[in-house]
Length: 292
Image 1 (cartoon, rainbow, N blue to C red):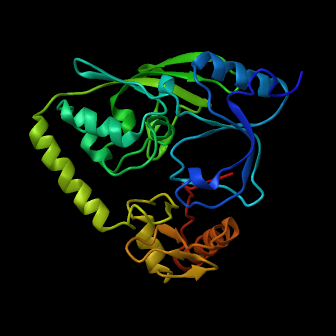
Image 2: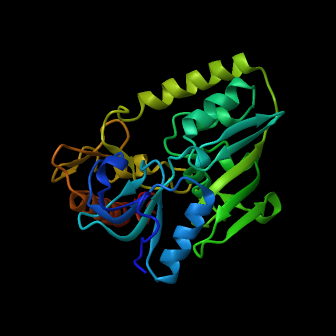
C-alpha cells in the first residue's frame, strides 16, 4: 500500500507552503493534507505514524518560517467546516481548532464575554493560540479554557479537562499534534463597553506594528518584563537588514520580508540578533518564531 493510497482526494504532493505563511517565503511540503473530518484526519495521522514519517500542523502561518528546502513528511491544514465550528451556549463557547482567532474574539465580544478583548489583533487560529497560550501581560487564552479535544501524534483522539492543563507565558501543556476543538467559559459584561475597549486596544496595537499587508513575523519572546523589541533596540539593531529581510522600524521584534527575501535571510538575521543581544546585554533571547 502506498503512503497516501485512499487519501488522494485530500492529499497533494509538493505543495508550496509560502502562500500559507505571513512571511510568504519557504519551500514545499512533501505531502499536504486538507482533511474533511476528524476520522479522516486521525486515520491519516496513523498512516504516517506507522510509516515513521513526520506530521506537522499548519495553522494561520503567522509565526512560521519554512526553510527553502521545504519540509519532509505530511503537513496538515485544517480549513474544512468540521474544524472551524464556533458555537455559543450561555456563557460558553465551543471553538474548532481551525477557527480564526479574530472570528472567535469578535463573536465572544459580541456576546459580552469579558477578558477576551485582550486577544484582539493576534493572528492565527484558536488551536495555534492554545498551543502557545496567546495573549498579553494581562491574560492568555488559557485563562478561559474548560476542556479540549485533541489528536495525539499517534492518531489517538483524547480529551483534556481543565484540571489536566497548565498555561504559562507563551506556553501550554497542550502539546498534542492537533487541537480539534476547545470549550471556553467566560464572565459576562456589557458588550458595547467591551467593543469600545477592544477597538481602543486594536488602535494602539496596530499603531506599533507593521501593517497587516506587510510580510512580517514576530520573532522572540519578551524577557523578564522587558519587551524583546526594546532589547533589540538597546543592542543597536533597529533597522538592521540582512539580504531582503529587515528589522521593523515600529517594533524591532518584527522582521519584515522584502519581495525577494529568503528563509536563509531570516535565519541569518535571527542569529545576528541573538548574538548581539547576548554579547551586549547578557540576555539569551528565546525564539517564538517556529522554523520548519
